[in-house]
Length: 89
Image 1: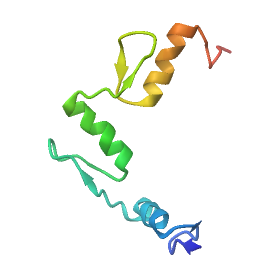
Image 2: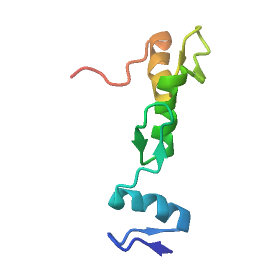
Image 3: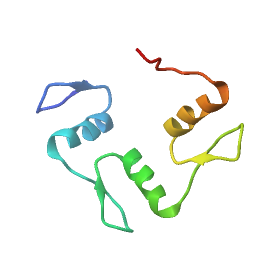
């Protein structure tokens, strides 16, 4: 295992340890070429880039709408099914 020197958390691969260390260092390795915003995580950077490009790679199979991330699509699909995953108290 690869232990973190800062908190002791262990990882199976060195690449996972390197990604984890950004939590402690604050390193923002992913910088937007359009506006200069910087991100710790590649997934946040990719989502941000879609703000500039307008890309919506998650289409709804039931209607013409498309979304920038899978969680937005998942939430939208409830409008077609009528499912309410979080009932009111």
